[in-house]
Length: 226
Image 1 (spheres, helix red, strand yellow):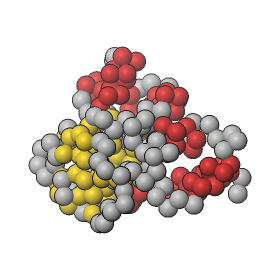
Image 2 (tube, helix red, strand yellow):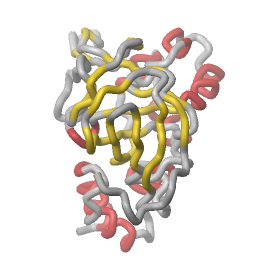
Image 3 (cartoon, one colour):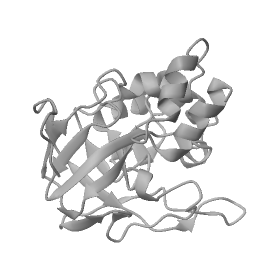
């Protein structure tokens, strides 16, 4: 991919953990979920639909090209451990169902459309993650979803621009920032966090921005009243 004309490298970090999962029984009614992820210490192919060996239980709301990779910042774990000291899932990465675990990519540092080289793959930030009820069930607390919305500690999704193998320990290097005015904390607040009042022009622009994940473009259009 030709990146001429974009800004120079701004973020450099490492992929600390690479995680995948398969659907397992999750709820009391037998509902399936692949939110539980296991770290992998070998290279995996990152394709347009996601990581080799990773599956989703609900393809209507998870997976697909706009959600090929879910990243959750390691920095947030201290907050969650302090809030929920009884939740053993927080003792290691993967508690939020993430595929990529690393530092330096929190929602205030990452922007819509940011492009990164990781291993031999090239990925692009498509939107933040919208939390669902499964976090409440996984942690055994009723207010997890609400706390994610309130704090903006949501994580992010990436689409794959170039396929290739990735593994834990790979450099995670920013190549481009086409939308510096759209950090994910601002985007999440507007689309999910209720901070959209008086932002009609911004919402219309987002609804037409094809870098933004399709479901969030639709949501932006709805919030704009169009």
